[in-house]
Image 1 (cartoon, helix red, strand yellow):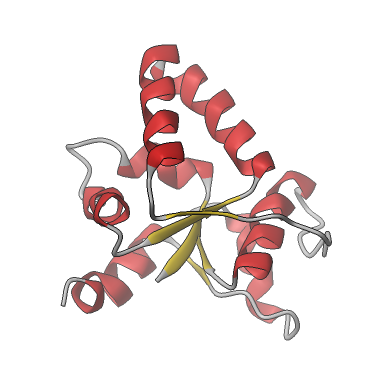
Image 2 (cartoon, one colour):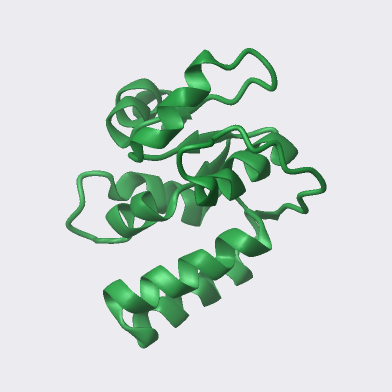
Length: 138
């Protein structure tokens, strides 16, 4: 399974105490393939440094770069499907290019549910947890 994961979700799933830690653990073992673009990686670095400090941010990014389950995705077209917050479009464009779903708790992504083309599947953490936890673990 391929997933583009919004920064707010990355912050939630990296904690060993998080009830959603299973998602990060599944990325580690390759049950979930993390799809990222250069823009997403820059945002991860910026926000992780701000929220966790430079050492933890650097360790997480080193893991992401070293992971054989990372799909580095080049985005050649900007669809601009989210008009409310243009900065969210980097996740949408990456998901379309990678053929993956998006996991985000950001309400701006809800507008994608009403767009017929290109179709992008978006899940909140709770929705993803409910829908996929038991399916992926098999």
